[in-house]
Length: 479
Image: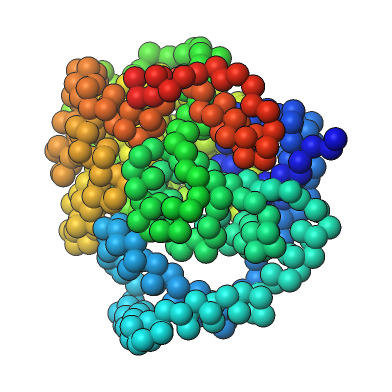
């Protein structure tokens, strides 16, 4: 009997780490036939996917007309209000800081118009109906439907259904009657991403917070199966074979052999546009001996953040080494392969650097797994203090609140406090250890390196295939 054909769209580089590098695809291909739709052209990556037992085709780019864009905007606005997350207000305030007053006014008027139309009796039903009709008449959904008919898939599994290209394919498949499973890629996606117009049959989530967010924002998910499986992309961190030796790590990244390393993990520019000031201040503090031990700063650029905003600080810095996380896409930063070397470099960086600095990033969780001091700057001390409020509010986003509340991260509110927190991290690395353990347990749920196995077992069971004996037990959760 032929294996079930399972559609898996890939539209972002992080999915490569999750699906291919964890070994998940190889595990699934033993009993399923993965049909990959890849969102960019990469012959070597395609060959790897084929070697992992997959069939590979191009993912069609979503095309939305102006009418559908407007209808979708109404549904997105309704959903933001319905899910009622503090993250929405925080994000809108931050984004308005760099919008012209004319654009803010237009957005405000458009939002009020939508609110009035949605509030009229029957308004939501009309908006839903219009969005559903325009999805077929003012997009390339019918072209996607033709591709899916040719592929003849039995089920689908996706990670980022909030990205337009992936959503288009997944939604058409679900509307065609294909059974669907989703593993939400990151713990912030249910509160920071736009409306997902698909009700999946199976949801695989990181933690109980995500379950609560799903139920609140998508009530129809009560009809679906929901499992907490943790985060497969963290599995690497629990395994020694994901680490280089410290000597090799320093050699590969051109780091001095005897200087302690301060990891500065840059974020995406919309989160903290003023973030380069922190890198400059830490470089100055090292230069003026305010941080003992003469550390070197390893600046790890965010995989999809434009380098231009950092260049002035990097040119002036005397104690900074730049690290691009992996080979960047030639056209679109999010479209590239992620190799095992890239993963080993990241794991080694987290392991061997002494203190980690980032602005409200998932990297706080990565670093806490390695029990390294975590520092999250929350201020803007430039003359205008333009981003000061938004810098503070980053740590009150719904997904980040458990981390903020854990006590596992220092949140300095001035340059002096930042320097002091970094100094303390080097001098007393055990400080806040209890909080770091708490945040890892709260966010990751499982700390045994077996989350990939959980996902593989869940997908096999979902498509009706035998599940081999598991190498873990539920008693391993949260230890």
